[in-house]
Length: 299
Image (tube, rainbow, N blue to C red):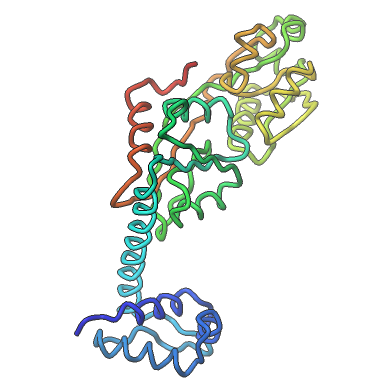
């Protein structure tokens, strides 16, 4: 007997709700009507899908298998809808999410192959990583650019590709750099420093370097936004710890100088996608460009 997809959607809602009552409210059904539909699905499958644990329902082993298949079915349907929606438009669209603190220069390099073509359109959204990943999972985005690799997620097995990496450096105005023509250890000890915020991956690596060198720094500013680190360096507040790509234009113009590279510390730029049966061809084109170049972005 064939499975009724309507029953499968109701089952999916119950499995992901905190209780049968919550699922019934969400679906605008009575609890008795919802229970009847679930029992009909169980009869069709020949297996119990839930066990009662107090006031909540717990999935049986058959229920976990059914949920996995249901999610695969609905993801395929969502993928089809998103693909056909794009196929129905003349202009090809790439929807990119970027971590709000990510280097704008890197984002521009990533998008550059698509710019200037009237038949191509880029939609760029910035935000916090979890919100962007949720949008990616919902097929609202094609790719998320970040410098923080997402942790493994059994329900959302991300495809994570390292696109580029760049060493971290001490960067400041020429007059500030010239004040400290010293060894790296002495610079870190004596120069006023502008650092990434303490909760960032780059800061953790930098703090480990300080410990290994036995250095107590003079921290004059901290920021989680690379653009703000760039502005603080331009204002001569001190030497900023950041990847050179963030201040690429200033380095080219001589407004800022790279005082020293920090050994053993790299910022890695990632493209996070999810498996799709019909991936966006524009994304494949952009990613193939990075696969054919070294892992250090250049102008």
